[in-house]
Length: 381
Image (cartoon, rainbow, N blue to C red; front, side, top):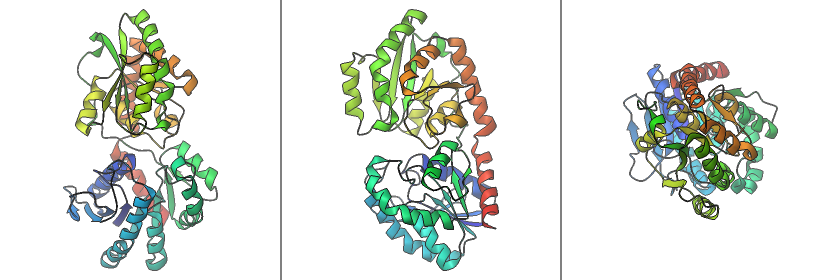
């Protein structure tokens, strides 16, 4: 099968969606398919590149300032640049199928290719492309909703990466079938530490993500001193909250740590590269994600692959990810659950083992890619 993948984000730019695009494309190619990716240029990246796995990447020039996220204007810039290039690629290669990440900004290109050339396409949701997901796009959602509904209507299949994201999509438009295929994780790269962390004199609680209001740390930091006092009383050793990542909300969170006397307990580690993040996972005792909204959080999958117990809110993805390997609690009760898991070494060990087992049974990219391919072939034949 000759498959065209269109995504405005592909490593090294982008977040969870870009990561999924990378691993799926690699697995598709290793299964014997011809894979071309149309994505955005960033800095000095080559315009055309073929990877070791046989994936060919085509990059178009467009506006892109931030490595991790793009504005609507930058997405529109990609849409305009990629539109013409996609036509050229379809004329030259005559693809069998098209997979787009996401409804916006790649969806209109796929819709155009189908109308003009008859190329079937599948939409993989990202979360932010569903109206209502991000406050910063409030008015833009109103403008793009009509075209988004048409993109969904004409798609040969729609994919959400969690039941929660599917339900969010159905609140916007419930006339079309949506399949759920979860994200995967590279469990060879993310793996547990060989050391005995219980011998350390401090329990390390880890958070990894971009620092924005929606990640919910503002509900944790004001109570983290109390958590430390209760854990110290029970375990005779305190805790350390390691916050890995950066973003516009960092200053607010630092102010909260100072206001609530938690400066010695909370450590802002800043943005780290992939290798460095892996070592944070391997050195941690507990992973937390107090997020208000997600699609399918890759950081939780990475923590699970690293053998960590999880404490997270009931955001999208929690239903699929937590099954005997962690605790799901709303923001109001989050720190109570965190205290409970920090005061039980036996529970942490058992849940950590369960995390790793769940990843190996359900969330390896090879398994996920097979489900994608089956749906792409079925949905477009």
